[in-house]
Image (spheres, rainbow, N blue to C red):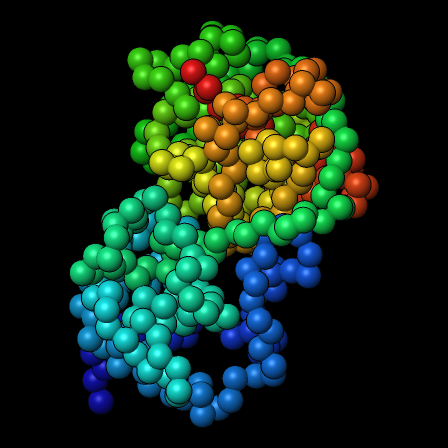
Length: 377
């Protein structure tokens, strides 16, 4: 019996569905018992029953078989690459409900559950990525159902856990600029400080367009490469990405032979995406491991010390708020008086955290980390 192309695509998609929490295969790195990025997910007791699994399979197959082949190919590309490859929007009717057992789901929610987050309960737990056609649209007739055009919304605990507080960092001044520019790409166009410009010049201007931030990559106390100036609305920072352009850390030349640094480098993977949006700058963790963020605008304005926030894979957090940063006044904060840029700087560590709960008290002890300096003009 001949199998149609559509049937083959549907079967491949079903084989690539997200593991169900409790079946021993789910990626527990997207959750945790502590930290500031909590999905507020409920634990699933035991495996999914065979009846529920069969019902879910039948429902998913019936939905997918109604989708155009070209759309199925785009969805399959997104699912099999785990968001690493550029994939088109999957525009489907937004007001179609499906029923699984006694539970009703909207069509987008069901596809997000099947192909990305089996524990997802409501679309309010999600944030749409700025690259998506449905971004910023309110109640559209068609909505994108590509699960990799979404991220889980990172909710900060209140009050923050005490382990995340840490004393002031003393960072090594920028290294000499004898090396070439740090910008690299894997397709498309990227922008960076041209060879010969000093850091101060790169901070002021890059090319003929104003930048909104610059990024420095550090390995422990040594900065690798030059400042990367950002003019585009979003930037991918990664070690290894199947498709994309941006700041490729994997192509930087580093003399650091530390086994820990080399190990963490390989775990950066798809890395992070920074995007400037109307309400601030968001950081999306595209990698398979947590990232750790310190930002003045994530904290209570009355806090005497900044916090380190843990962001799990697949989650987004509003890492910086320009309006809030402008209003920050901490005359008694030693960190602010010693480092005037602190209010407009975000520090992000890959894989390894720092602070009082960790052996690393300062971010300058972390193997691989970023310093993002925002343009406040």
